Amino acid sequence: MELVSKDSGASRRIYIVDAHHHLGVDVDGQSNRNPAAPGGTFDFCLRLGSHLLKVLSNEKVDLKFQPHGFLKELLESEEKWRETLNGTWVIDQTVVFPFNDEFKWKEGDEGKATYWRSNDNVYRWVSRAPYSLKLIGYSRMVPLEGEVAIRELHRSITQLGLRGVKLHPRSDGWSNEIDSEPVVNFLTEAAKLGVPVIFDTRGFNQVVDIASATTKARTKLAKIDKSLARQLKVIIAHIGFHLSYDELYTVLSHPNIYGEISGIHNAGIRKLFEEAPHRLKESLGLYRSWSEKIIFGTDFPYFDVHHAVQFISYTLSEDFPGTIEDAQRILGINILRLIPPKLRSLPQKAESVHVDKTDLPTAKRMLASKMAKLFSEGKLDISSFEVFLSLPPRVSVRDDCLLLVKGKRGNGDYFPFIILTMMGLGVIARLDFDTSSFKPLISRELGFDDFPPRRHLYNVLWPNTTEKNQLEIEKKICFLLKPLSGSEGEPEEKLNAS
Image 1 (cartoon, rainbow, N blue to C red):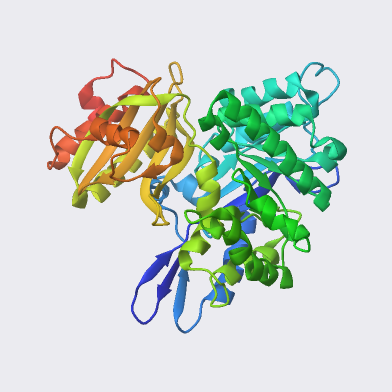
Image 2: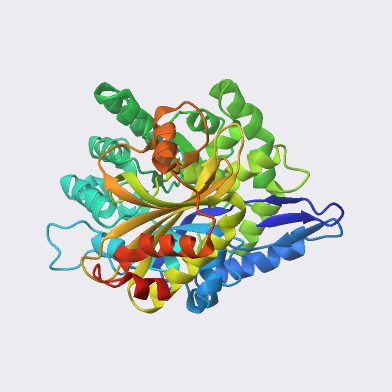
């Protein structure tokens, strides 16, 4: 979303991520079976954008919605993707997870987790274009299932490539067992995998129990490795339900706990932001901001457009007590920091094409056109789309991105493609896999400093030469895409012609 001043033409970009959204069919009758169907996720985005235009556009500001960076090039090259996602870009990405839904455990599923079918259903949607360009999938679990739940956690993250976990104690009947050994063990395993866990909450006693279980899991992880303790990421949903409890801000000050706001509305929004800045600041210390602890979510379809409009418009209004950077954290960056990019393994080497920064837009259009053609020929799919963040203290989403691209012929390998700008150069690279840790990719944070993994990333991507000739740039882009063309023996002239 872009706010453009009518007087100066200056613009502010806000990247919005919905961190709480359901996909499937609930046993209570709620449904979002198909995100592209009438009444589904994309229709919700269309209606939200229409309402925000009425609320935020005025004599001083124009409101614009358009896809991020390289997505714009992709959508201009692939008509079917463009038609599906057109008009939905008020929300840039949406985290989706199962309801208590009709796909869950059935007779004959003995030995499997309650929601294994539901997790497969989410995976089918979020791992193929164009849905993968916008949707981030979480699994759903019942930790009280013990080793069965742990196995499903590993399957959903390492095999399906889902990115987090939804837990619903009340709906799944374990509200009185939140602060228990199976839950602590489950949180410990999720932390080892580096993924966030979001708890639905009903009643402040559940919030207290979640905080206790989180503390126990952190202690357990710290005994193994202090870095693992930092990977524990717990999100408490619906913190607006608990604003009357002073202890809420003590819980949110926990180093591993964050609060998600779906369901908050009317006076509750103002109350949250009247209290959170000073109540959280008292506990977080000098090096953390109060706005790092609050996450935007909608809980669609249980809450609808008017709740989201109220919250977004308030955070972008003069009544909001924070800065535009605080608003950007809350509306998108905080949840992105918790979700690691989707990589099957971690890359060490790269095949790259390097161009002057001024030539990068042309190179990106060329890459998008060729990717779209390979998709139309059934040779390519895009499994995920990731954005990068600027290093603190700046708070913004960069135009740089990472795509996990899957070949649909041969052995169906996955290839990460990274597109970024570095020191006046444009880089398009296909990353080759290795087992080395690439923390800048996992943390999404890019920038130039002395952090060894970040320095190593740029050393890998640093050019020997910079291409200026358009034909040579095209030839190198074709080389990057060659493993996806379906035939390693395909003549180079034929590949270039594509």
